[in-house]
Structure formats: structure tokens, C-alpha cells
Image 1 (cartoon, rainbow, N blue to C red):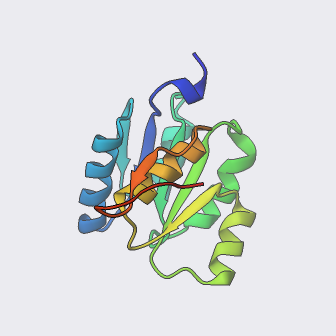
Image 2 (image 1 turned 90 degrees about the vertical axis):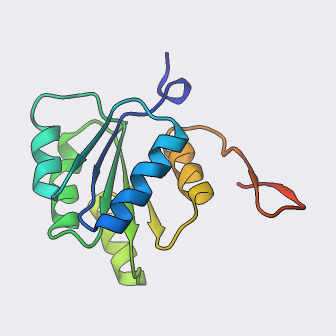
Length: 143
């Protein structure tokens, strides 16, 4: 079974409780395989190097200390199939450029909708975005 045909295993690092609860609910609604929450980027690094090869997507909050440093350190050492999604509270052009140079595959600027979150996960998994209802009267296919 290819990665795009199965539910992703997601490792995520979020410290702020409101965002943590929102992401947990969105992941539950999306339908994931294994999900693990950690509190720091150092924990992400330790999980990745603990011998586990089960993760498909790593979601990290840019408010965590050392987020781009850890991604930059981990990226050359982990499989290319593992995707990094960075949640950004106040993205600037410089912060986005730094994240991309560190090895982030995609990012989301907060606040974001569950539909946009799911589309980002679909994209990272190599799937076509799902049909999303943008309003009560129109159906739109996002690309």
C-alpha cells in the first residue's frame, strides 16, 4: 500500500493548549493512523531517532524554541518521505524563508480552518485535495 492510499501517522509538537486541542480535533476528524503528541522539538528529535520509522507527517508550532534548528538538523538524516508542516502564528516573509531553508515542506498561518488543514495534509500525503464546501450555497474544488 502506497503512502497516499493509507492514513498518515502524525507526530506533532504543540505547546499552547488551545491550538493543541484544535489540532487534535482536526486530526481526529481527518482520519489518521497513529498520532503522538510531544511538547518540544527536542522530543520530536528523540522520537525520530528512537528507531521509529512509522511517522509520515510531523506538525510543529513555530512558537516552540529551536523549531527551525531541530528541523534543519533532522532533515538530512531522516527519510524524504517524512513531511514537515509548520504552524505559524505571525508568518513573515523572512520566517517562511527560514522555515523552507530548514526543510519544512509546507506551512499554515493561524488561524486556519479545518478544511485548509485537511487540504495541507492531503497535499503532504500526495493526494488530491478533497471537495470542500466553502459556503452553504457553493461547492468548490481547491487546488
